[in-house]
Image (cartoon, rainbow, N blue to C red; front, side, top):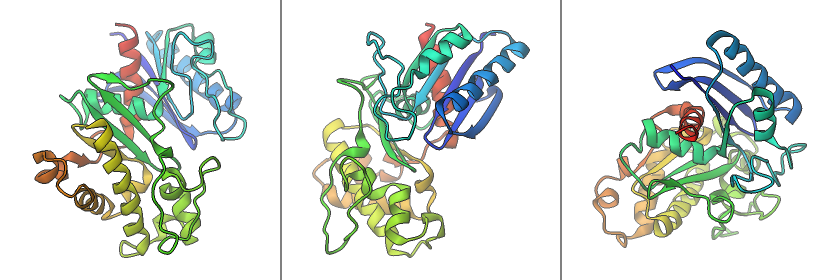
Length: 297
């Protein structure tokens, strides 16, 4: 059976796997994201070890933190480009993997790849237009539109949309180095920790942090619903594991839409319209395997 490699490249950790589907993962490894040379080198070593056991993989799919260049006809295709992560700007990620392993490499954003995984095997099966949003160290969104991952000029940067902020209710100016109080600057995990002087994992469910967090995320979802008209929204990432946060977001999103969008998905079935990833924390690496499989078809 033909095997495929997948890399979920996050700003905090890498996840690499070899397999074909959720029920056929032959090997998997997770390790911290350090320097490009060390981290990509560990990924290459993992695949070389697995190829010695299982034979050559047919292709490797990469879902990477960004910004990235996902356009195959570009001279910088497969690069991590203007990332603020120290040492990673202008890294030819896909090129290093392809050169070392000698196999085709498919490349996209981490969130687009997670969306692909959820569409193939998870919470968006059977849908052709949906949104995957991750809320963690950063915030990013991937979208499938009419059965195709959305790219356009570069690729979506949903974490950097600008939101209204009331300085009286929230005097925190945000932490995005580019925009200050954009969605990521206000609602990412590090923003929560900086605003409240302790990480979200240490804040109880009744803490006011979660009402504010739900407000910002619901405001963002209203924007996405009104622009992309997704058939479903999937919310992943570490921040979303906070108890009670997902129901709060559903309630506020419905309230902010104020019955303007007349669809039973929103008016009656918000619990399935705005949902958690069915693949859990494996959406990204499984989506990377799905991307690799598509690349060889």
